[in-house]
Amino acid sequence: MNTTYTPRAIAPDTLEQLRDTDDAGRPCVPYVDAEGGSPLRCCLRPVAPGERVALVSYAPLRRWARETGAAPGAYDEQGPVFIHAEPCEGPQGERAGYPFSRAGALRTVRRYDARGHIVGGRLMEIPEDEEQGFDGVFAEAFADPEVALVHVRAVEYGCFHFEVRRP
Ligand SMILES: [Zn+2]
Image (tube, rainbow, N blue to C red; front, side, top):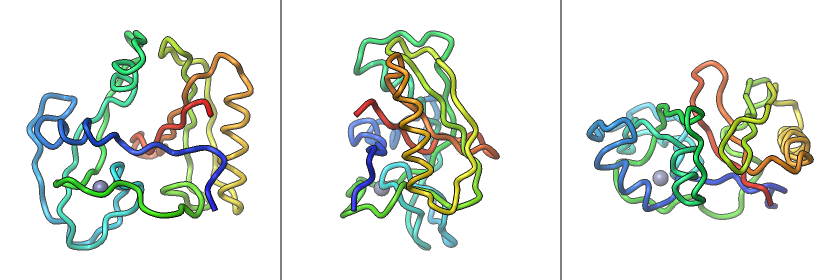
């Protein structure tokens, strides 16, 4: 069963660039993750033990703005994300719920308008019914006609998890 809103993985052309030089201008440094578990933003699933990955700096709002012509200015930011070190298949099959979701985990759900400016947000503790919880905060965000997209981030690390655009 698909969720009401579509969580977007990092686009393949962006991944290709990040595997060379990341959004902070650093070269990509692949390694084998023996333990696994970190959230892969290319495939929207956790790393499986033994996969080759890289931790790169990614600027989701800047990348979106290049597509749409928006000018986020000072709202632009970049942060660390895990990706596969080599070309990968992206999200596979039918999703059960939203990625990287775990009841009790804390998320920020930040709203942006069409210019790429922040227009509010909220802190969310993922409830027992994870899918309904996410659907609720996204419905709340997009009830504001100004909101064009939403970023979900982990609170503790501040890192970007995924983006949802206005359906
Ligand atoms: Zn991947």
